[in-house]
Length: 370
Image (cartoon, rainbow, N blue to C red; front, side, top):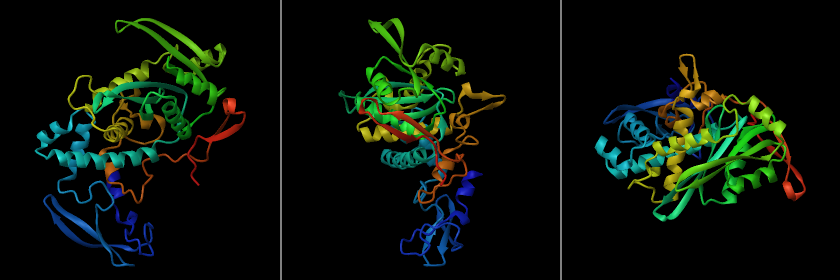
């Protein structure tokens, strides 16, 4: 099992900052020391031969100093990403609500770290972006979730929480482009929000074919849909649609369906709920945990390959199998293991013109293994 590999002795490092082998794996300085008892069995302790420091087997993981079983911790995280609120989780498992909040804080921190390191090297062939409207604290404090979906792999690649502004559009899309790989003009489809058009025309001329779906509504019903090509030529659009395995015309159907999945999986984002987020930080942390689960753990029915149903990360080549929360939470932040993630050789560089700035610049779009 992968989590057993992550917890093996040869991968352990000394946590003592004064030790000459501090955070240096493979030095042969870590030996077994003893056991200690918990309510759920024995746990191993280790000792560093260089400095004499002893530490537990869960040191540096999400399970460190956990007074309950690891299965209970994983269950709380699983319920949270399936639309169950904190109070309901606490009642189900006879836990204190403060304990559930603290555990989810720890789980979200590890999820953010994992996403920042593992969610790299994906190939951009068709990208769709959209926003979700919600509120934090009260309905007067409106916040928007900017999401970006790589359609061919269904990978959730972009996430920003904030106001509906040009700055947040740039923050979301720059992060997508910095971590992705581009081998040609990819298809980029958004709604009629002008900020996307500004970004594509200023920062991505020639790098993508940008189309917008402009919908008109009356009494909360869509009355007309207009498709507008704002970046690239008609021939480039036809070629991009020919390359696409999912779209035959300009659309935002996939990212809109993805947004529904996000709403259904988060108790914070329900249309009529008393469990809305009270702080932006809490919402962002929960969404990072949800993104980890969606990309690496939840099989997507549209990604069926024979009897196997893949996760978006498997389809994108970022993971060799479906992961579990145990795989991620058993990893130590001080030594992040790459056994489950494909390391891409070399780096790819996309050059584009900086719009009206009048200069050109390069953006590394790959994962460099040096």
